[in-house]
Image (cartoon, rainbow, N blue to C red; front, side, top):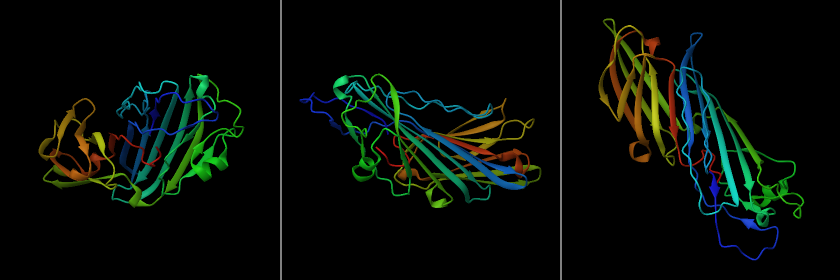
Length: 287
């Protein structure tokens, strides 16, 4: 979630209270399922970015890099909130979550002195047990009791024209039911070729994932895979030997989907699998 807002200017009586309206864009999640030392392992990382800020995911050279969608607010240029959230997880090749971590932060930027003593009311719908940490100058008890972000000394202003962190949160879990999306790969060797079935499943029905890219490595020197059934579109990168399965949207209306292809190879050739997507809301439901 990230919001920038404009309202008609009220009579100033510091500290004022600003209730942001959600205009979040850009939850990116990247995941892979890898075979490591004989054990199926995977890694997922993601990032949230919104509200007029461009957020770029830094990845390894083989892994695609994506930029979160940006929004530019024309409603309230004086107060700007940016929420970033990063999700990383390790999952087994045969299924099962080994670990998942979420790291989030809210940044505040004020350009008009009239709003320098505001208190921001956040909509915290977390039910997953996030651990919150306020900035040392932010009133922690006010956040815990009322969901308000304001300074401990209400007569002291926030710095102007600076982006300052006001709140962080963190969550660690091994609960598989909290995974946003699962991707299962079923390769089957037959006469020197592999018949591969890939299936995704949306595990959090309230989420809407867009610009989804599921990247499957393929063996080199054997040509392109022959794709049969596929939901969405696909693209084969012959230089990197990567088959990209692309879906414009995954939501409750198409919560599962499959792709089938055939190519010479072995079962271990098709890991790690990497997934990227964008979502208009944070996973942690903080707005």
